[in-house]
Length: 159
Image 1 (tube, rainbow, N blue to C red):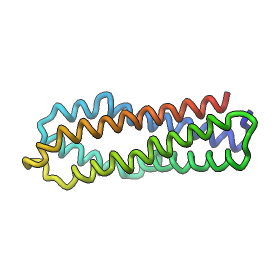
Image 2: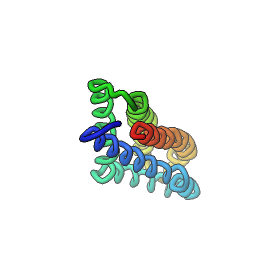
Image 3: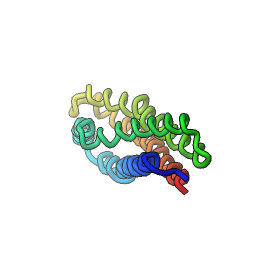
């Protein structure tokens, strides 16, 4: 069984990955649907404002901190190679690092950057908005599932 400081790390990993999954689930289940219902100019302006707010400390500490924590869990797992939970810990760390953090950098952030370059009331913004919503939400579904699965993997390592 995992004990001591290592136990605390894994419990923090469960909490971090679970909270991130919850944030992403909220976006996939109702935030993006609500934004998609707005006229394109309003949707673009609202999403750009959300994207600016997202890179502030309250979310970034959770999001990036969980990535660091997942990396630490992976390294400690490789060093200690515990008798139980090794596979689950490595799977949980991989899911978060690649399926959440990495995917964000290669799929969601480039779309956010492209949207930020558009003036909300322009024809270009109106034309891009439906594509943005569809593609961003698809990748967000993947991030939601990966983060939730990482939380489950960490929990399984503790049992």
